[in-house]
Length: 527
Image (cartoon, rainbow, N blue to C red; front, side, top):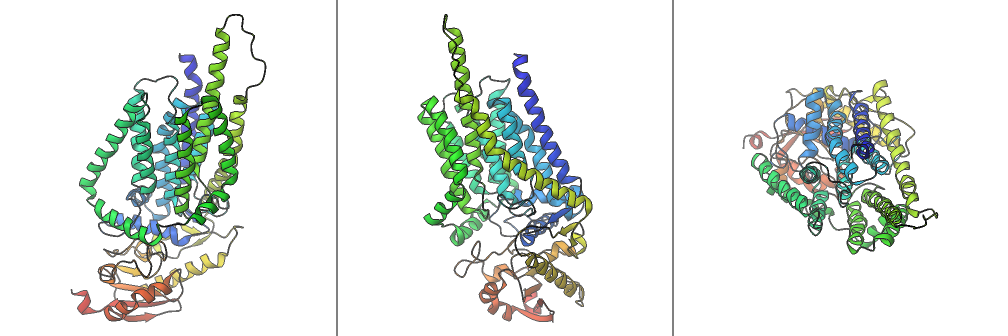
């Protein structure tokens, strides 16, 4: 028994070692390098500052994302002591925290070679500072919550496979791992968490895994109730989710078809492995599992702002490869047990399963590793332009060979630097500064007290439009200084939406090349 467990233990150790290496590459430079999506990065730096200022997500500011999306960079901010380390250190901690879970789940259910391949793939998906499907040089922690959701859901899906050899306390460890993965998804982006709960409910149909699946669901619910005692914002979170759903929740069949076509190569590779596995197992339950990997993954992808990355397909492919290897092993054992049987000399299709899986996983694994290494190298070299605000001294905008218009990012950064100078020139030190655009970065960048009751970000067509929006009395209630950009991301429709209220409640006090600075009128401020 000990000899048979050595390869699995080695694979588990290598998975943890890969996670530790990724965490070091993230955290040691102590810098955040971005080449794209500057505005998106600023959401989470502002969120970390809000948490450090004592605010609570959904209670003190509106957001459709889960609280972990803000507490994770806040923890990185606290440990590193600067906002440049907030995202890389926060993500490094998450990678390390999920490493034992990943190692247990994969090595208890997959052959060591498959576990190692898929473990490295999932960890790098989690660690890489890059929106999935984009260039290696398109570095950003933008939409990092999607990578967390994909990696956690993919690892959870592998738990569909029954362990071939039960380990000590197998069911307890399985329940704890499944509950942790589900909670991470629920409190990062609820879409992934809901699919995780549906999957655990599906596992209740499996008599051999029913107990740990039920325990995992119970642990998730109990932990959620305990969290609500401290958070006390579940209903407010639901209200923010409903508002966002009214703006961007509905997607048509055309989007689904386009999403499928963008992933056609992945679907073909997945279908090959799934079909071979079903040919051997002849199981309706396996067919339903593969359908769960294929369809909900497309639905999640359809809600994300990423060009590629249905990672549930890769999880299903890993499970299919393991099914094929198990079937080949059972056939070999059956033949060896028959007296006088002639050994089968034909090569088994199952032997090629790891190679098919490797062909599916390796390109993305290498792609993510190169992007992670590039971010670390640029961080060590302190490459790029500083953001020009004291608290952003370790956040830099680098210009690489990435496709797209770099002038947009550099122009956006120049406008923020101009706004910071405008605020510094005011007669009275400002506090509770808000920006009528995508995000309000000045509180975090200048170390000011953040406003209360506003939104973490305003993205026209995603969480705000002309029909569904926060009332101006609520959005601007805690704002003392309002920055209205002359050039921005979605400032024009927001000015059209809120301009009348601004003219009634605020007075212009300063104007620059990029901004008009407003201060709340005294009678309004005293209310």
